[in-house]
Amino acid sequence: MELSFERVEVLLLIASIVAMLARRVGIPYTMGLTLAGIAVALAHVPPKFELTKELIFTTFLPPLIFEAAFHMPWRALRSDLLPVLTLATLGVLVAGAIAATGLHFFAAWPWSAAILLAILISATDPVSVIATFKEAGLTGRLRLLVESESLLNDGTVAVLYSVALAAMAGGGITAIGITSSFLITVAGGIFCGALVGGGALLLAGRTDDHLIEITFSTVAAYGSFLLAEHFHLSGVLATLTAGLMIGNMGSLGSFTDRGHDAVGAFWEYIGFVANSLIFLLIGIRLVMQNIGSVVLVALLVIALITIGRAVAVYFCCALFARSSRRISMPHQHILVWGGLRGALALALALGLPRDTPYHDAIISISFAVVAFSIIVQGFTMTPLLRRLGEIPAKSATSKI
Figure (cartoon, rainbow, N blue to C red):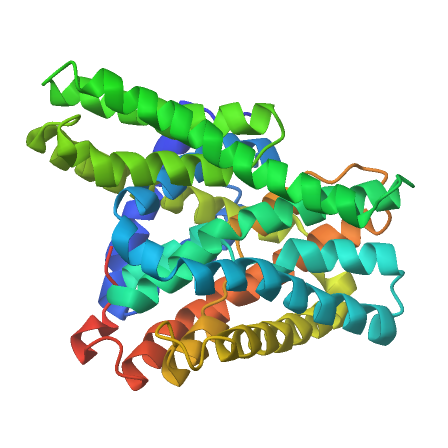
């Protein structure tokens, strides 16, 4: 069913009320939205509509990625790029291997289906991660690590997802083919983002109207994503690149000071709207899923991905234990528990061909994993951050 303007208005009203209530009772905003979505679905108000891969990818992901990248300092990211890339590539592979192996041997799933599900849920989700850590009031290097990893692992997941689908369809796969596909997906996405972001900066340098500058940033956010996806490249990396360029280079003469501030404020609001709608829609769709039929396998998968995430983080961080980019043990603990799953996993699951083996089970389990991530991990994240001294006690109250 189509997501009409009237339904959006109703959902935004619900989101605003949930935001105020979440702040008062001290629960995470994302968790409150998901629970509100469940309540909305049970009450049949508004009418049901479909949460699809296209809706997540073309409507919600670009603004959320762009807003995070716009505020991400390039110099700090560059200094931590090697450990972040290690977590986003090797870390995803390790976590996925553990999840797939456990699912195959403990649940008797065929390797093809086990690997496919493991790929969908092994990568951290930028939507959930950015929303949760921003809400908790986390700043500094730790927030940069968790957010940048969740943004950069998209290239790894995109390639592995395509490889798994090709394998299930009987396509020939070679190590050289996988490597070249990965490099093309990543480099192509970055190129698209640089092309569109650079064009936006050049055009913005010809005006001092902050409204036009906001419009150019909007074109950059969605244009870079859609251009990359059109050529089957990484849309997330494209929008990430465009956002980094405009956020870090826009103040060097292309964007006016007023325009730069206006763009930041505009995307902060758009990010709030996108987060509000996506978590409400996740809650609504949860009611429609037959999770009860796969609850035991879902619990197994949740345990496997938690173990896999822990092994991946501690192993990857150990590689830098004697370097200047060493990651402290408290930060490693937070990276483990902060590896949230969310909209990206659901988008990939919902985009699976209908004839994919274990199709319905994969989707239902993905929703169960995301629900656990949002409600359990999201609810305990702020107390964990306070306990480890990463945020002051006053940040216990949710921030919007």
